[in-house]
Length: 340
Image (cartoon, rainbow, N blue to C red; front, side, top):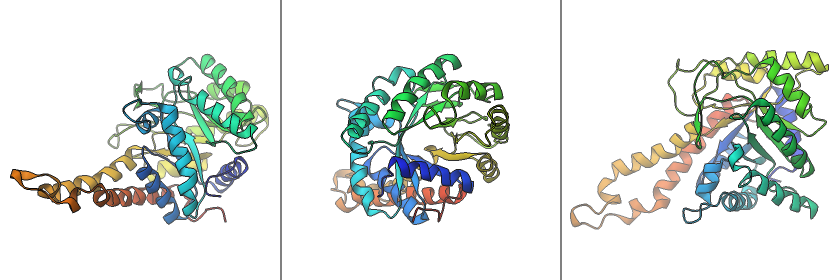
């Protein structure tokens, strides 16, 4: 059972919360990066999460039509087949989807899974993300309520981002400023609108200074201790200890101390994209520079098929990304925790 059933995905998240570890959620854009993520999880003996953003899905749909739903469905179906060769369990997830792309991405994918469930099968994806951080909190939560009801019926977990993450991802941009911190009031309003599990399970991407993309140390002020305030503030109101399952966005470049604090305060999923992109591309650049006159037909020569064959440099790219995934598992304490 390499692709988690709804029941197993819930068990994975429960185990992470109880054990104070988190699953790396690795963005993929191709069959090759999918294999790299699966390999990294397997080598770390960790279960994990594979995710596809709107931009990744558009890329997967091919540059002729750029159809996001086709791209996401195709890779998910592919993952259901090839993941069987890896001795770990993974959940499939769709990353950041803003309001203007809901009708072209998440809603159709929810419909695909609803049909599968109606036919007695499991959903194609195990979770989807609604990114309403560019909307008012009231509008964000209203749409979240609608999506949560649909997701619950399709046995899918919803991820919601209630306040902005800085930087840019797939065209959604937020400034890096003091607004990148979720308040207890924001968290209480979320619990009032979405419940605490009784209306359907959801993951909460709260903001504690998170920024997408590449940044140098010191440019971003992360405050993962803020998550404890949110847990305690909402927990006191509802009489429930540690009520939220948190997601750590903008995880690339974070320090070990920041990650450890986040894990202690209820983070069960951390997104990685920037670091794994670089880990995939770096070996390719190394190969091209070292084999310049082989990968190109320089000065009328014929080059070397063995060096420009995509399989040659692609194997190094897969290995580089897989290594970074295993490092993420170690940082998030998920190494060696795979379901038996």
